[in-house]
Length: 511
Image (cartoon, rainbow, N blue to C red; front, top):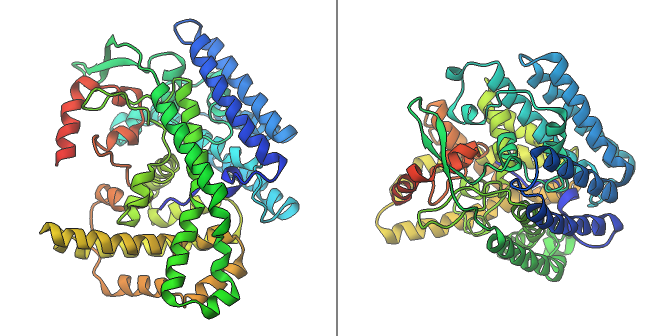
C-alpha cells in the first residue's frame, strides 16, 4: 500500500512565504528545464557540464527555498558517499540505508516536535525524503551490480544494477539536480545518467548474448505536447484545490455537531468527498514535477503501439485510474508510483520475514513521525490483507457475464473509495486524539470487518513471486499497453526496446 507523500512538501495553500517560495522555485525550475534542453543539450555540450549545471541550479533552488537548511542535503549526500567509498560494496547498502533513514528521521523529529508541530509548511525535510530514496536506491543498485552475482538477482534488480562506482559529481547531480530536488520524483540512477549522456532516444535490440545492444538512433521526440498537457492538469488541479478543497475540510468528519446530527449515508458521502477534495494538491505538485523533468528532456519511455512518444518514465500518478479504482491494489498501483517501487526494491524483495508488514513500517518511518501516519499504516496492513483475501475468494465468480461484472465493478468501486478514505483520515489529522475520535465515531467498523474477513476466509498460499503482484505495496504499476517489467525496471534499455516490444505490448494489452 502506498499512502501519499508528506503534506509538508506538497501542501500548496499559498498562505506562507515558504509555500510561495516552493511554487516560485518550481516555476523557475520549469523555465530552467526548457533552457537546459535547448542550450545544454547533450549534442551541444559535455556530460560533465550538464552535471555541473544541473547540480548548481538544484542547490541554488534549495538555498532560495529553504535557506541554510539546504546544507542538510549536502551533508546527507556527502556522508553517504563517504560511507560507500570507505565501507565497500559488500555492506555499504546496509550502512547507507541506516544512515540516510536515520538522518532523515532526526530532521523530522526536530521539525515536528521543536519547531512547528502540525503545520503544513514546505520545509527542508520534504526534499530530504526524496534524497533518502535516491541514496538508498543507488546503494542497493551498486551492491547488486558490483558484489552480487547475476544469477542471484531478480530481472528488475539485474536491469537496475550499477556496475561502476559513481564519481562525486555524478552522485551529487543525481541527488540534487534542479529537476527533482524540491518534489522529486524518484528515478533510477541508470535512467538519470542515460539522460545526461544523451542516450535516452537510442533504439536497442537484443544481441546474441541476450543483452540489449544499441543499434541505431531515432529522431529525438519533442516533449512539448506532454509538458503542455501536464501543465493544464496542474492548472485545473490548483484551481480545484483553491476553490473547493477549503470548503470541504477533512477535520469536519470529527466535528461534534456533525457526528451527532448527520445520518450514516451523509457521513459516508462526506468522508469520500472530503478526501476526494484533498487530492488535487498532490495532483498539482506531482504533475508539475513530472512536467519539469519532461521539459528538460527527461522521462521518455519509448513509443506506444501507435508510434506516439511516451513521457511517463518517472510519472508518479495516473489520475483517471486513481479515481476509477475498483480495488486497493488498483488505487495504489497508480498513486505515488515511484515511492511504491522504492519500497518494493529496498524492502519487500529483500525481506525474509513478513515483507508486507516490514514494508508498511518502513513507509511509515520514511513519511515522518506524526502518530497519525502510523495509525494509517497499521490500518493499511489490515485493509491490504483483507482486500487480498476478498479478491482471491470472490472475484472469479463475477467475471462473467458482462452485466454481473459491471455490477461487481460498481460495488467494489464504492467499497474501495470508502475504505481508502477511512484508512487515510489519520494521515491528514496527524494526531492521536482526533484520529481515534474519527474511528470511534465509525465504531471501528472497517477494522472489525477486516479482522473478520481474515479469520473467516481461507487464505490462498502462493509463491513469493506471485505474491509480489498481489501485494499492494510492491505490485508493479501495470500499464494498459505495456508489460509490467518496463516500469518496474525503469531502465533505458527496457523502455526503448521498441522494435521488439510493440507487438508484445499489444498482445499483453489484449490479453
